[in-house]
Length: 464
Image 1 (cartoon, rainbow, N blue to C red):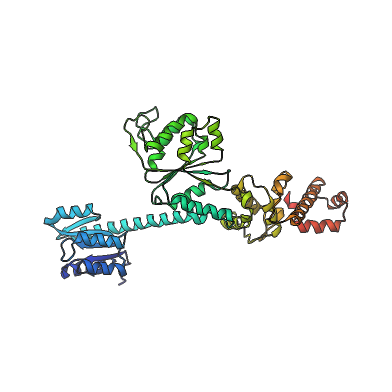
Image 2 (image 1 turned 60 degrees about the horizontal axis):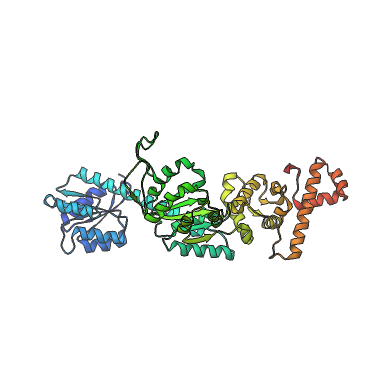
């Protein structure tokens, strides 16, 4: 007969050997892996090597009672679930054990079915808690500071500032153009902070209609207005003990800024239709692509709210300020989207990287990612070529090539000349319907020279 599958690890702690033996037999027959200990000190030793998921602990034991044993076990293994075993007359003490963190208690003499039901539920609780903790670690890994990519000095400084900002609990204002990664920075600040185990609530201030702002931020009571059929908590209440990210705070209407200021000052608010103040402990992280100081001067943003938000400031640089990171971003986006688009693009030609580094990305990293995705759809081989970025060739010249002082004048002029030549050839071919003989005549070069240049620049008729 096959042994039942291992359902979990259980530690039985009791000073009576008979009870330890009986419990161990019953639980092993159900497929649990079981270890036993005669007292609290032995239990702590077993915890270090056995790492139990659940512990059944006798309440009354010499040297160390069950409650103390349970507490010290939890210091070693934060996730272990404890069940207290007690005589009928000690139920009040067992209830106290639950207040101290025990999952439940079982009275002697116990029924085996009751025991197994309690154990099964305790193991399920452990597994659920373990899954939640794993998901939290995954989220932190996904949104932590390691995901602020970039090897340039300016990005290294950004990561340093994020670490420093995360150590405090002060309000933060993140400034930067659209597409520079302000939300990514806000997530990194939260998940590197002491609040990382609590919610991060993200609010797009530009997407909420003015009429719904107060209800969205602070919630409402049942009957507060026509459609308020039940109580609803707002975004600040959702973020209690954690952080709230107010994206595009510069779009927040002037008339709604007063109540936002009160939350920052008093750390309390009143739901729409309510009268009882609700206390919250929330860290505020705000972001804007606007010049808030200019808006303050123009009377479009409250000065007192600006200073409340701007306790700490983080500026996300434009991609134009760290173009040397573009090859790293391109490789990252290729790996990220390769499976989605079903393209086995393994490398990028040097011409492409030169072109992308000289392009003026007004949409910053977000625009670059979109361009890489679009180019992947054009790519047929394993290498991404210039022809895959033809959709960018229609941009005005000042957007396509921008002087990069790190290249130096000669390399820049050579790149500029090559790109200009490529665009002239491509445009001429389009004008003549891809008739190569006529294109060569217009360009005053031989057909062979035209073919060579088309091959050099990766120009194919399929670009149309």
